[in-house]
Image (cartoon, rainbow, N blue to C red; front, side, top):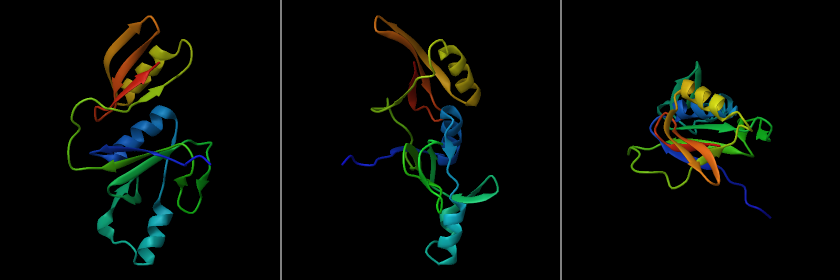
Length: 149
């Protein structure tokens, strides 16, 4: 049986990253407010583990996005399919990513997608044109590289 997985990305600001990638991929930003309320009521967590995002309680060091068509746990809003979890870490990004996302907007849509992603806070790092294809290497708001094909 295949293993379930999620991609975890270390970052400085998980909520900014979740907002960017949710908009970039048209994914759903998970809302854990109901889970947080239950855990607070049970005394399982304390308010110092939390922050506020868009007027709702959220984990201080974690945020996630999920594919809108994949299953999720309605009690916690946690994705059970394609999911990216952003976790705050104290150290800054150093060097080139060893793992990155490739996004595929469809034939003839790369330029428009690059422009849309720039408007969301991404930056173009370089254009690549090789015999096997062409793509744009971009950086997300924290400088993590990804490619638009």
